[in-house]
Length: 393
Image (cartoon, rainbow, N blue to C red):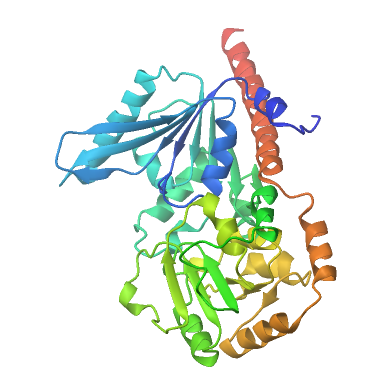
């Protein structure tokens, strides 16, 4: 099959099938892989993004927020609903959405195997599992998750992975699995190279500034930040993002650490523009074993030097290509920072970085996914026709 190069042709490969996505993430929480990919589907076809339920005082219902072809569906369930009752309520609410919008020819797209409990009655034309993380290793993960993921692999027609390390770990689990590392919107983050006006809550923070954006949870190396801030009190650490699943009281509160809270995706280049170095300070533990941080190519597209802990999907390819500093200790962190801050000529590194990123884009990742999905739909149609022919002969 000839590879596609533009979004219109790519979507045409799927016809006008609706896409029904089941996600453990909120659409409006942090703009990341699901939003990048599904917003591209929504340019040509309807996308129904079904979130986990919100518990409240009231009857079961689905709140639907529409943005052109994107329908954000948020189940609301009465407090105290649990177990089989909760599964049945969610199953009914999903059926209500399909009935309300006359969804018949569709693709089921999963970010969480937990959703199989209330979606196994559906009959989609294709089942896709976009395995972006090892969810069973995350804090508070339900024990049943591993069992459901095995079911997910047995049911899925196509599996994508959010990085190479998780692909290597799971490639023997499915005959049609593909590594699709998270990519970048280069034009968006390249704005940071020319922006001069600083956000109000950052403009008075002294330089040098070392920044991070993302979710601050069990994956974040709190102690590394604490040690680095203690060792270099004249460096200022700018931390953007929500704090979840950990106690905010455990975060270091040095005067040179600045927690500025959550920022929306559009604002990120403005903050990046004012940083001297960008950070990926993740702890090395089970929850980070297979992560592929989207922020790595985003930081580089912004033209910022990057210091990262040895996350596998950062080490390879970014560390091995000498595009990112990989550090194991606070001492090495400080040494890498001092090296970058004293480097007054980054042209050679920047040229190499831009060349490396040249072929990466969310449009390309999405287009490659569509092509694989289209092939599988065609294969299923041929197989179904063959089966029917045998039945009626």
